[in-house]
Image (cartoon, rainbow, N blue to C red; front, side, top):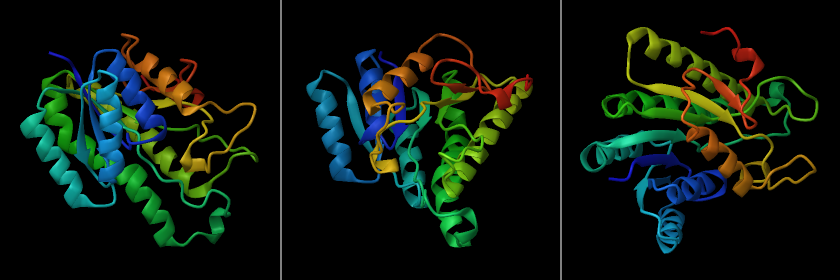
Length: 239
């Protein structure tokens, strides 16, 4: 039986490319998307490539859809092996942090931090039973004048801390679970307005790099990994 992976935000961009790469490696892909039309289109594209895929409706800003998605997975896909928290929103990437309202920051945190945590929390029983893995797609949090989006970076800093902390929690509790983050680096996607540049990757390139790390056969529990396989500096010494 093919192993199964659930990917949020898999109807386009990096998520869709991860789904393609995982599918080509023999995995059954559960396409998580809030847009049913785009989600089903992605599923059909994968099916046309001979990849086993199915659609799961999930809107990370709608708790009811998270509960329904988890219920569907527990009833129909209890053999789930991997959860990939890929979906995210950027907030205003150009506005200075001091100009944000609390509601604007809360909106980004809801999607990029609280919803992934809730998915992790609710799917732990399924994933632990299958000695599964949780992968959080993330970014570096170091300050740079060239890339300093306040809400997006703040949310990913929280996601990175969550990844590291839960990794140690799992280890200390002896759980048969692994959680780690992967930073694909600058990638041209809708999230950044399809920005391009000499150091930017295509979504296809990023999806391949991420999948290669996921399938490298190594234990990465608690790590936040750069696309080149190096563990992020701020993660050294955790374990």
